[in-house]
Image (cartoon, rainbow, N blue to C red; front, side, top):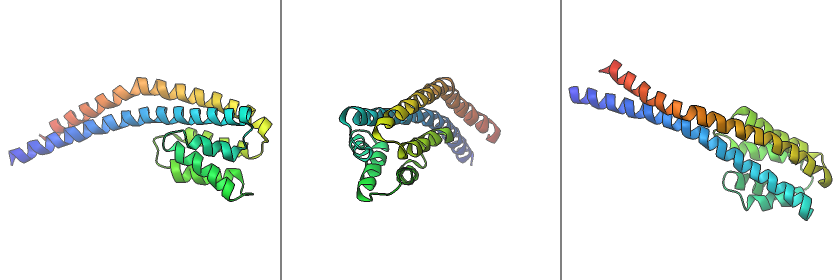
Length: 174
């Protein structure tokens, strides 16, 4: 009986510690996801500015270079725009955002910025896309810096709280 109680206490401590580690890892993953999206926006901007590529072609090309989930997101946005000409860009963007990005460890403000990118790009011609993308690049850079600062200040705290919470629960249970 005592062995089961000790085993249960150890499992509680381990799982509480893992929850702290998972919270810290989610913060790190948010930084990586935002940096990857930023890379995608930079690449689309270069495709539009220097190669004069249409947005759907630029999105498809960028999707072939980025890592997941952005690879599938950009590729499918470009592919659907090419397959269904006349479909509103923001509609495709939002649909693919929900399909490929839902459940990622990102904040609502991150998703809002991603959605705004699609809305703004719909109404612009190739000459203006680059200017709008420059504005979103600056916003993304600010979000990335904020996410990095939060990760550096809170990730270790979450890990420690997970361990301490586990120990606290063990003390209460035993």
